[in-house]
Image (tube, rainbow, N blue to C red; front, side):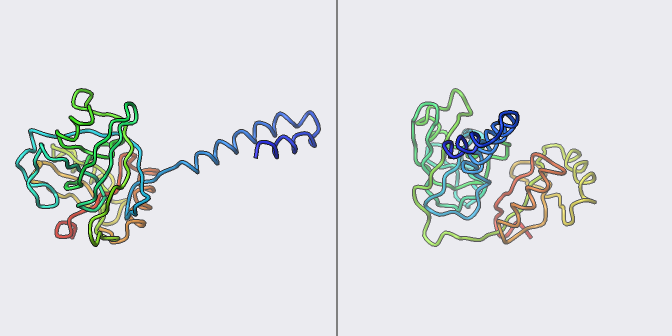
Length: 231
């Protein structure tokens, strides 16, 4: 592509070359960005990868029920992800050291912008991330669970608060502009979250999240919900 651009530049009169050269640089940069962009995860296959940051959770949740119904064991190699099917095996590679660990998805989270996976204490120990707390990682699907669902129940989460008054304030501010916006109490975490109505099509939920991030709430993201909860 570079040779083609140089050939075109030689055909252009000198006064116009600078502007065209600048345009070509911008074009190449945009094409490169499009080629490497990875959106929010939804229904996946074995070729799926994701890049972001990993955190970990442990003592405060040990022995409590995870989102898939299992009892969370901080000494097991498990993790939380916002949308990957429960039972998915994910290879987590720490980008700055190359350390790797394979975990099984059993929970939902993390609900912090920029973080893509919450590791168990043991998984974080093997990855060397106990001290740093948050580390750059790359995720790769190692195995999908049998009969992994390609559809599910999804909502767009705009915020999650320990103080119900903050959730109420966000709901009152954005409710008139987002039909079906709801406040949902989560007793297990003593928090209240503000979410959209449920969607059965991940792609539609993702489009809604994109519009909300663009126009109203930059921290909005898609969350896979337990079927019995998102009604």
